[in-house]
Image 1 (cartoon, rainbow, N blue to C red):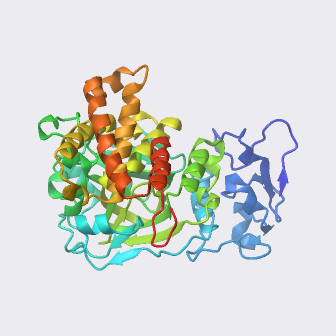
Image 2 (image 1 turned 60 degrees about the vertical axis):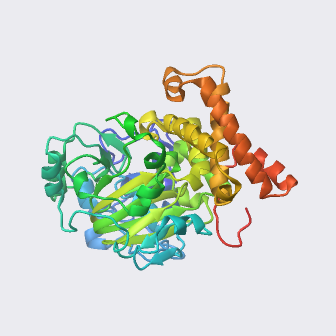
Image 3 (image 1 turned 180 degrees about the horizontal axis):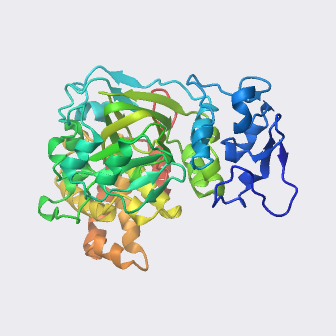
Length: 491
């Protein structure tokens, strides 16, 4: 292994035509021990840290006769999944040279085993069960029975989905290598790609929202989701006009083998449910601790994001397999990546819940700090917050003490943070036109926010000592939004 001594970037035999060879990742070179040809480490799918473990390197021309490369010292791979070798055939046929970068990073990291709750079926998953849980860990439901949901048949194909939705329907397609969206795709062209053997580019569809479509008419999400979803509970029915309110209820995800979505938090830290119709998904889940969220924010802004594995920055990252017929629920704020071992179709959706409102708002602020484009944020979030404050303030003004005591601590804190958040937004010196439209009558909203702050703050004060509440109130107002809750874990 070596680093280039030249001041000008140099190409290797495997460099893609438009390879950005000015990147630091292209400073690491490997020399074939047989033919002595030099290659960029990244062009053969290896990071610099992995190149340092190579004992003997064999290039694509020499592998067939002399065997694969070998590593020195302890075995590089520590995970249980078999290591994926560099696919030289794809490289030769035009596949971008870093095709295997995500597989290699995942294979080279030791993840924690799945230790989350697995329920036999969905009968136990009720609103009261969710409210009374003493953890915000993800959980898996093994059988859809009892969840009260309706799904397409498990044998449905991508071609059939295209026919149901209309083959001219536009669809957003992600290039797994760059993690960027591709334009000018239709469901017809996507079905053709999915059904072909020519997959020199690994592509993924993860944002096809199907509510109020022929496919959506065949789907009913889990009953408990409808019952806790804040959009369903607080957005006025008379104001649910097309393209004027959040449509994030139902997505159809279609992923080919080896598709990968890098570590992310869903917009506004929504809860997510994933029901695997066919195939399999592997989730890599990082708890939403304050420390992890700070690291995630730093990683998201870093130019090294594209060539680093976020899991290496944290102490705990859990690996969870979700097979066909199973449903995974991911609570608010969990940072996660997703790998697809085989062609897979998933039905899933996003939803906001009251007990996680603190985290939802904290993530909304984080998205603004990290300059997440508006199209990737929860749609109409500010307007939903306005509707919630107006309705909750009126509700709390009429609520007796017995009703107030039924609210959980996390629900109370969520309502308090919501009111504090909007009070601060209303008090801002200037408002963008879109924000002003979302907030509506500022004086009326300020009154509602102040009333809700006082009412929920008084109830929170009754549940803590004066010193505890003084400290917690300051935290909530300043932005203590992320917690990993487990029995016996200090907060």
